[in-house]
Image 1 (cartoon, one colour):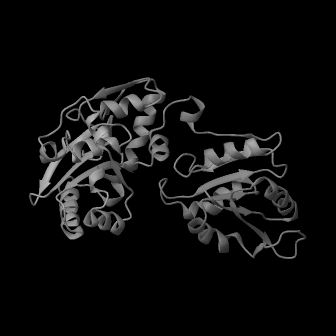
Image 2: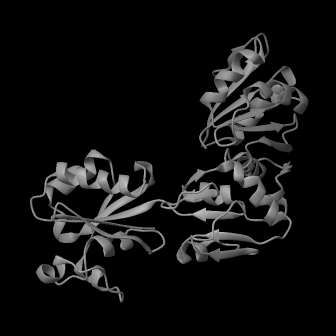
Image 3: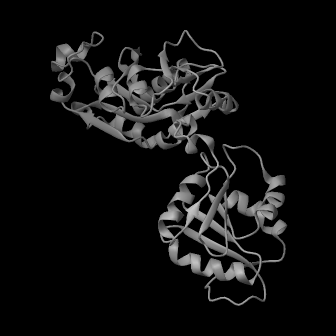
Length: 338
């Protein structure tokens, strides 16, 4: 979260906003106030009516911090509400700057996170977080996704899942063991395979499509190629790979290969074209795996256990291969891991 609008309505709230500025280092902050009020701000944004500024602020800022009555804020933002995945964080703070209410977008908009940060910065401040999962220390799957930069699909299914957890009912999670084991609080969660999916379950996978709440981790891609393979050929193979597994460009974490390919012009140009981070791993890195991989020509030429599969794992967050090596045009291999 970077950009914050602080909205005031009268002289007392503008005075409070001026004091608040001293505690907002690290944020890009604009203060909005009515004309003909006294202040010592360098660049106060003047407005006549709240209705004139809120629609623009809704699109422009990550958070809108209101030094206004909560009722007034509720009435003014009501026509602007669209979706919890896109609405900005809305917070209300009192004139004394010691009571903070995250009013809207507590999780995905990070209003709760901002409220907690303000409490740490402001003297004697307390916040009132009403989100049930926060109050009961219950896992919030949307926050898990947010923190790990995962996409979310079927967000409307979240409420049912959260309610099951709040009611101490079991929630089955269809995912990979490595990801399941990485969830910090697995109370009332049960790992199941991908054949057991319904609306009472959560899916965590970039490959499985369902109507359930679905979190989509990023995929680490391993690529091997013959010497002199062009970037055009690699791109075509990569796009075929994405289409086959119904992956989006935004789902790709990085690409990886063997260190002998670090001067491969086609591979480097491909990575540059898509602005992918590319990492190269040594023979020692690759052969450190105890597991065996799909049969590979790299074993014969370089004495490696493989290229695409082991480097995909080495570049991944959870060290689990989810897409075995695919061969394209007899010269390019691609694999995926989470």
